[in-house]
Length: 132
View 1 (cartoon, rainbow, N blue to C red):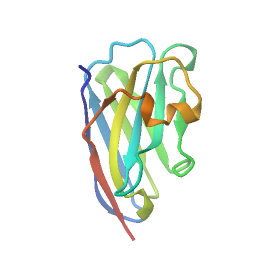
View 2: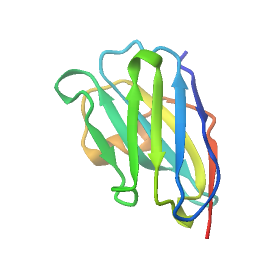
View 3: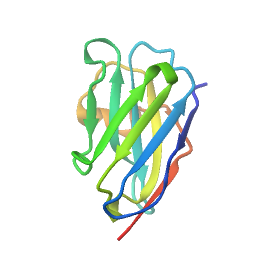
View 4: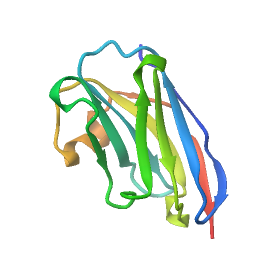
């Protein structure tokens, strides 16, 4: 069973920064995505950023348009960690943030890779609140 645990959430003023971390159990797949999603009250879960491990597309990332240029996803596979550096935060970034993995998966398009339905394992989430 794959386990993921998020940390690093909190409250920050608009324009501020936060760094989220996700610690996973060892991912014993040759090809997979690990990504960040968020869900605000009353809204659907949306993909924020994801990164691929394996083969020619190793390290390839996708970002939601709403966070491009502000958020950066990174990973440390040796330490089983995933990060999300969030800068220039806005009140609309307020949400519960989750990390998730697809388990084994071949490369996908951005729309596919940022879709929650292809991710099989999820963490419990960490809350991010941005005040204006």
